[in-house]
Length: 197
Image (cartoon, rainbow, N blue to C red; front, side, top):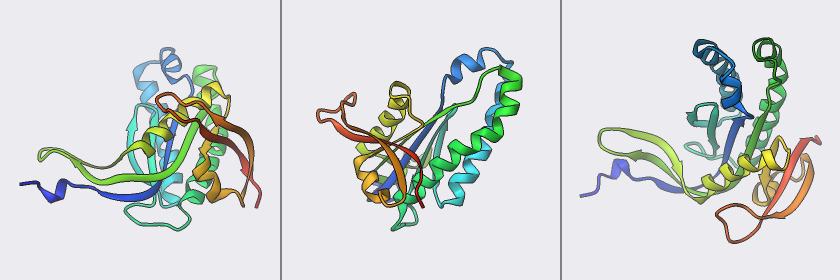
């Protein structure tokens, strides 16, 4: 029989993926201890922002962060919370720059991808190890948008779905429909520049 504790449920949420630009080449210039110290400082600062807006941190993948808004607690304004988080994450970097530049001679930059849609959320894994996590196409697209921040030279990219939730509160740079790797249909994408309110 299926262990119902391992089953997820379908929910509509907003997923945020962030990544430090060129972190691999940055870390090659440092001792492992320095990499860990800088990374912990960065992840601590970013996690505090995510929590302040009611987000759930799913996982850290090296310097990458996967977070989501709308589960386990549902929010009517989940898209707004995710976008405000991303803007604050981007702006908070300026405060971390001094320490980073001192050690690496490189300015710290991040890319953030955000998409809203349906996922499976819950304790997913095996009897021996479970994670409260999200899976589904929505997560994949948020990750792809984060990848595209490099080629489109943008800090925060959101899908058209998320844009419809935050159109009243942001200034954007529009890219229109963009071909996204692994998807048959082009995706409406724009960059969030700043808040208009």
